[in-house]
Every structure is written in structure tokens, then in C-alpha cells.
Amino acid sequence: AQKITQTQPGMFVQEKEAVTLDCTYDTSDPSYGLFWYKQPSSGEMIFLIYQGSYDQQNATEGRYSLNFQKARKSANLVISASQLGDSAMYFCAMREGRRNTGFQKLVFGTGTRLLVSP
Amino acid sequence: DAGVTQSPTHLIKTRGQQVTLRCSPKSGHDTVSWYQQALGQGPQFIFQYYEEEERQRGNFPDRFSGHQFPNYSSELNVNALLLGDSALYLCASSPTKLAGVTDTQYFGPGTRLTVL
Image (tube, rainbow over all chains, first blue to last red; front, side, top):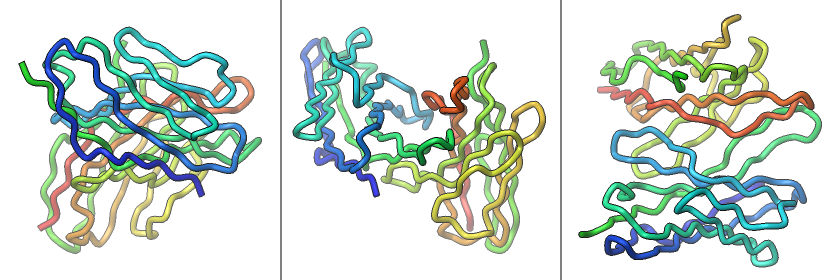
């Protein structure tokens, strides 16, 4: 079974600084996808960034980038130039699915709470 | 373009009662997945619906059931509620690619269920 581990329960960063949120994963499937979601206190899970296991380059989306190290099975999220509005829970997730069925589900880590201070 | 919508936003029930939660997927999405998120935890997969059928189910008892309608909207029903069913219930929708593979899942705001 696939597993996602987020070892940082909480992280603090000052506004305008960069921060890295850690995520390691475990899977025996050579084809997989990794996602990061942001969950503000309102509860909605907001999709941030996606990395496919066969993607040659690290994914980037605006201020978000994914530091994908396949050999180490890590997919860390880097947020550059932090803003007060970045304060939220951040979840790393892996897409798990049965081949040739079209079915896929997400397996989530326990999350990291990020607090951005002025 | 409306995103995923869920109703109601909050719900309070007592043990033993039944509850129905509703979800409308993002425009163009045909697959709906339901997740349960207990306090302080990551979401846990309940089940997924595609073409009005349950495609896969997570480790949840039969008290949890669902339905998908021809317009792709979905319902989650929970019978004989327990205190432990108190959680945030998230609905996620995704499009199915031509090869039959689902794409990125987009989540709704969730329904917060409290069982007393």
C-alpha cells in the first residue's frame, strides 16, 4: 500500500521568506502522481501543484515549486516569498489506482501547519 | 465557471440518525470522490462514483452509501450515525481522460458534520 509521510507538524516563516515543507512517499508502483493541497481554516482543499513520476523536470506553479527527488522518494513543496495568506494546513498526497481501470484515489499525509508572521 | 459545491455547510445530528450530504461537481467533470477528514488528520477516501456506479470503496462500513445522478452530482448517505462519524466530509470531482484515466481532483468546501 502507498504511504505519505509529513514529519513537520508545524512550520513558522517570516513574510517574504521562502519555506520548504517536507514530504516522503512509499510505493512499489512505477507510475504515480504527487500532489500538494492547501487547506485554509475554512476547510476547502485547494490544489497547488502536481508532479508525475515520469516528469523530467520539477513542477512549478507561480510561487510554488516541487523539489522532486525520485531516488529519495521525496516531493518537498517550496513556497517562495511567503505571504500572510499562505498561513494554512498543507497536505501532500499520492495518487493510487488500479491499472487499466481508470480508478484513482488520493492517499494523504497528516499535513503541516504553516504560520507566516509579519 | 463554478467550482465544486457542497451542501449543507454544517450539520448537527444525534446518534442513530441518518444524514444525506450533497455535491455538485465542477463543470466538465464526471467523476466524484468522497473523503472523510477527522479533526487533525488528512482526508480518508470513502468511495468514488463514475457513470452512476460506485467504482471503488475505501475502508468504510456499509452504513456509508452513495449515489451519482445523470448530471454527475452525487450524494453521500450515512445511516445509524456514531459519535465517531463527526468529521469534515469533502467531495472532489475530476474529469476522465479519453484513456479512462482520471485527472487532478478538485475539492469542494466540505460539509462539517457533528454527531451528538
